[in-house]
Length: 334
Image 1 (cartoon, one colour):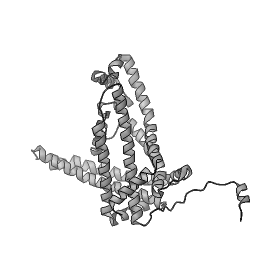
Image 2 (tube, one colour; image 1 turned 120 degrees about the horizontal axis):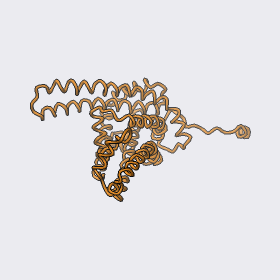
Image 3 (tube, rainbow, N blue to C red; image 1 turned 120 degrees about the vertical axis):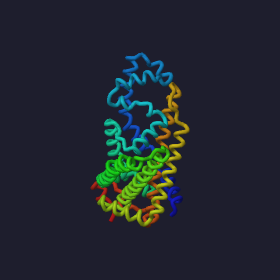
Image 4 (cartoon, one colour; image 1 turned 135 degrees about the vertical axis):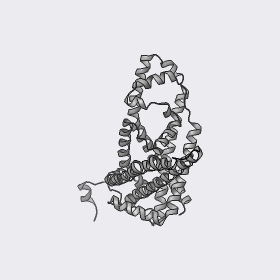
């Protein structure tokens, strides 16, 4: 199977599982909703006190916004202009590239989202691997059965990411970049050095992502109990199929960039009334597209792995059978 066939197969698997798309979107919405309601209360309270409600409803009021941020605390400090429209995506990418830690309240939300996503990941990957309906019992059985294995794998992945962001990133950008540009007087040269360091860091981050992705797949498809063994097996798979594994990752990245491009062209950054409703609808549409892209990422990697190791249509973990009563056992014919 080529990487194009894997992408096509992954796309078809996702379209045959619309419940996964809706479920992931609702999960994201449910985790974000409490924060949205809390922020709504802060904004509403400040608008009532300032009397600027009507002007804000008709569009962005910079004076009121600056006044709100000056007195806000906690969650209110995250309500900055950069969260509007496509600027939010750029802000997130900048924070990752520069290894900037998000605010504490966002860290808590991300931790909750990570735990919930890890729980649901087992059922999601199992459904994509089987490429057929498994039912609620089968889905949540895979979620529960694989949760602690994926958590252990997550700890190993977190350790690798910590090395990259807490050790390698400062080494590259706080030491090596400073050393390279200490005598540079041309801004273009300094930019070239920084771009090269970003490219090197991104390449290592990509390699870790690929290995972690295939480690998750080997946990699910082969019902592996050892997280370390899954990582070692993923390393072997990537080493034996480097062009396919990295090429498919790059192809999926292009698909995700297309999704970002669609959002950048359609997102609005301000307005009130119907314009605000439209902006909210576009934002939710982008989240749905992002969910589809993420599922296609996983499904295409699953298809490639199964095709290269003759696991197509196979998972080692059997589907659970709902227990029958003793009476049913008694009347079952021999």
